[in-house]
Each structure stands twice: as C-alpha cells, then as structure tokens.
Image (spheres, rainbow, N blue to C red):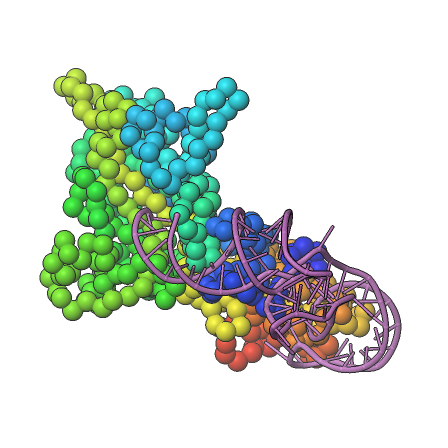
Length: 408
RNA sequence: CGGAGUGUAGCUCAGUUGGCUAGAGCGUCUGGUUUGGGACCAGAAGGCCGAAGGUUCAAGUCCUUUCACUCCGACCA
C-alpha cells in the first residue's frame, strides 16, 4: 500500500477530550474515528489490524471444531420475550413499517438457540459449536475509555451445545485453552489473567479474561502464584481467598475484561423447548455454553499494553503491515530505486506500507512511522542507496541493521 | 440518571470588569530556501463563537432553555 494514496492523515495532537491512550493513538494514527460517544468508524489501518486479530481468533476456534456463522443483527422481539430478556436495559429497539418490534442484537442466544434447534434433534447431532464475528449494539448508560466501552462494537461470540453438563465442562476447558493460545498470539498472554467472576444461576463462577492496564474499568485481585485473579464483585463470596490455592496474598489491579466464558446450562434451551433424544428415546434439554471475546476491546487493550510516548508498537502478529518502507528519496533516480524495491517486496508477497509521500522531511515521516507503529521499519534513502543497502530498524528500539539490496 | 467540566477556523487552544472589524499555533493553498527526527521565509484562503430565546446602545463574554462531548459515580462485555 502506497501511503500517498491513504485517505487518512495522522494528527499531531490528540483530540482534547480523549484521555485513554488507546483512543489517543488510534485516532491520531488514523486507525479509527469517533462519530459520537461510543460509536467509531474503523479506518483502513484499523481494518487491517482488526482483520488480523480476527484471523487468529478464527484459526484457534476452528481447531476446537467450532464453525463460523454470520447471524443477523436484527432480532424479533418475541425471542426475547421467550427468554425474559426483553426488559434488559442495554437493548436498542427499532421497528418495521407494520409496527413489528425488533431488537438490535446485543448478544445472540435468542437467535442461535432456535437456529441450532432446527438442526439438532438427536444425541448423534451433539456436541456442536458455532461462532461469529458480529457488530453488537448495547445501549450503555455511558460510553467511555475510547473504544473500550462502545455502544456499537465488534465481538466474537461462540455458543456450544451438549448432551450433558460434563460434556459442556469438557468443551469449556477446551475454549479456555484456545483463548490462552489466542492471547499469546496477540501478545496479550502476559498481561491477561483468567479471573473468577460471578457465574449467574447455573454455576458458581464464570471466568473472565482480564488484561491488566491502568485504564481498565474492573478491579481484580491477582494471585501471583496461581496467575489467576478474582473479580472485585465476588471477593466477598470467596472470602478474600484465591479459589485455587486459598492464598490471601492478593494484589489489587485495574484491568479490562476482553473475554469471558460462561456456563448457560439449559437457561436458553429451556426457553425454546430445545431438547434432544437420547439412545433410549428419552428427551433431555440441550446444555449450552457461551464464550465471548471483544474484538474491538482487544484492539484497544493491545494498544494500552503495547505503546510508548511516540505511539503504538504493534505485535508482529497483528500489525497493520509486515513492514513500513520509508523512503527519504527525492531525486528521480533514487525515487525509482525505492519504487522498484517496493514492487519487489510486493512481488514476494510481503504486505508493506510504503511511505512514498513526496515533499515530507525525514522527521515527519519517522514521527508518523513511530505513531502508526509497524514493528519493522525499512528506510531507503540516498545514503543507503549509495551503499546498495537499506536500513532496517525495529519499532521497539535497538540498533539499525543494514541489509544489502541484493539480499532482498 | 446524579455530580463536575468543556463547546470559538479542519485540529489544539487564547479571547481580561460586555466595546470584536474575533486571534495564535498546527494543518491546507502559492512561491522560495531546505532535505536522516514534525525546519525556515514570504503571502493566501478559512468563523452564524454548539443551537434557540432573552437582557443591553453594544453579547464570544451576562441570563434562561436546549443539544453534544469528556471525566467521576451508579450500571454493564
């Protein structure tokens, strides 16, 4: 991608009323734009990062036999009346011309449960797991923390269906393991802590995945030896002890919940009379689990964890581009040499952002490159061309490396 | 929905006890000089001062209403 054709521009200053680092850098770098409180446009660079995050999530979920679907965002209100959730206050309502009431999807139990019901009748049809990437709508009382709490946001949600609770528990553990791998690949593994949280009616606890960051909205208590944490909301229920080792040596941290896993038992399947027939011909309620992972929020969390005073430092796995080719060339012959290098990299299948903008000084280009945060920077200039090299630098710092043009 | 704060140029902000023909920096456009860390010089364009009422000879400035945004609560992925 030639940077000269990119329609977004970087900003020198952050919008005055954005406080959170994720919002400041994502807006300044041209990854997102705020339309109004809690509602953001995702711009070309942001789309690249988001799609890389989703690619990783998709790969790991497919490994545990989950199947991708894409469910509607418009839901008939009747489904919520069946589950008794038509009164919850985060729902956005709208209606059709004939007055039929609709809900803008805030979650998809009310859609996915009757969907699977159409295909699952027998124990032979279980277990099943489906997931999607969706825009969720939640009428938050207050949007805040940049893209971390929006009224419209992207989320991966997954639902699994089982014969028994023990099979659901087995899958729950598989999802936990898949999430661990996802967070490792997103360079959030270190900072992301499995956290005990309130479980609702059907299990003692649910589990959240909390990324430790000062801009987080949740307070968790971290047990260093187990690397698990307890959400403040249930500290009283666990008597202030780590549920795994009983330790009381817990450290208070601010964190942002980027994912959760939840046992639903027959909470939703009962509402739709969703049963399966076992070997003896008896009917049983299908047992469900649900597993959320906030894609937009994860994007924000990664920026919160990986930045310095100059800008974002993307992990390689999700960087918008594999490399930032920064040209400082002005003379025609040099510019042509830089162009040629860019075309060579593209021909090699490398996804490169090429700063070919004319008339900018080196300082401006470097500052933009720091802000955008592509981990590898390749500088081509009259100086390097005179030696038949390019200069390669890591965004994270360290000494430059000079690579011969013939080696590229 | 309670508390606090902010709305002035594309962006960040000045604007004193009401006197404004509304400013600066950045960005944009023209020309010139520069060219490895947001450089410099000269010029130009760009504003219904969030919106609606009101007070006044006079309102960006005071009053009322309203809308929006940010932060702190409550609530929530």
